Length: 220
Image (cartoon, rainbow, N blue to C red):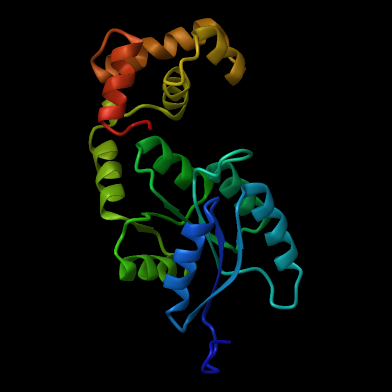
């Protein structure tokens, strides 16, 4: 119930590892009398545990989870979203993050997020996005829409999820062998993917590939 006794229409849970950010988002959301934040946690593991508990409580699971993608140590926001949606398919997820890289956007949406908005969006835009996502309607920040449109209109140059995964790993300084071991594929498979992604990016080295991918916001 809201403070004036009116029925709360949307129940929200927040997953973000920054307490100050959570406090700011909570204040913003609860300024709207039709929204109630029922839980806030700082990690993906804790988020899944608390959601399981809420699901069997008298009030039931929340309508929506606001999910940050970078959750520090432990499982990230994308994997948390995937597990959450598998366990609680009726609970919607709205990614609310500072990251606008294509790999993050595609990863979150493929994991089951209903929408993807940036934390610096205007206040009313965030509230509207929460309402839309809670109702199961897709919602994307304008910048996110632009990246997805570009990906769809230039499919020949769009990196596959595996190519993006390999390039992101290489960007951390990992060798081909280390990437192959981490992804449970052969080193020759890594090299084959590199040839393909070099062609898509119009480069001939991993250094250039990483630079161009970051310039195009394909990876962080």
